[in-house]
Amino acid sequence: MKIIIAIDDTDNLESRGTGYRARELGLLLMQKGLVSLISVTRHQLLFDRRIPYTSHNSSASLLCEMKSSFKEVIDFSKEYLIREAADGSDAGLCIADFERINNQIINWGHKAKTEIITKENAHELALKNEIYLEGFTGDKIGVIGSLAAVGLRKEGCDGRLLWMKNMRETTGVFKISDYKALIGLENISDKDGIFVSENEKILVTEWCRPIHKNNEITLIVEKEQNRSEYEWKCASKEYIKSISQ
Image 1 (cartoon, rainbow, N blue to C red):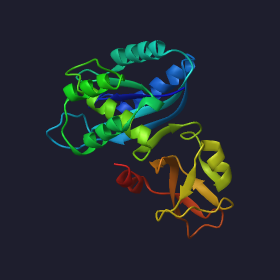
Image 2: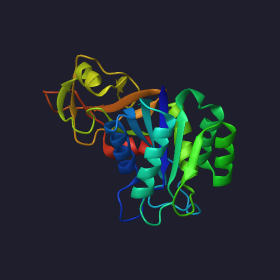
Image 3: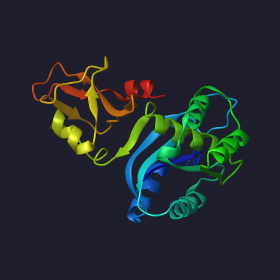
């Protein structure tokens, strides 16, 4: 059974960010044999001075295949957040069965990107849909973003990938088809959305982040005009950030 685990507001200005904590939590859950981690995604929420946030108001989701019970996953994740959430944070945790995440939850995710919403409404919605949602530190407003991340990840059209198997440690020149298979990508396209040839080659650098587009994991690339060893390279960090906010 697939589940989504989401966390929000675990950091302060001196600590590791929520994205790092999400990756660490996922890998620890996998080491314990509680889940098989599929991917970790960053989701940008509303950036507004009226909203308390550390630096960027982003949350993170973990797509997993569950290998144990909900209780074991919840208990482990709770212990991790209580232990690792930074001083002054407002950590929130949401865990949901992938198949039970409905349009109400997806709409909540969209609201969190465009409106100021409340933790009380987050709890009401989670309770109505039988989704686990809990806050742990500070004012516990991280429940807003963690519930939003669950909805946005289910829809599959938001955010950029922070972790996939082999993604962060892989660099070099690859045949397009080989790199897709190695990372688990569904598409590689240029900035105009045109898929690149499976037989051409790509330069993969240290900062290479696929995005969710049309419910598929897609790497955006740009043409390399001046090299003979490869035809494509990963789109720049600035470009990927600009389209995944």
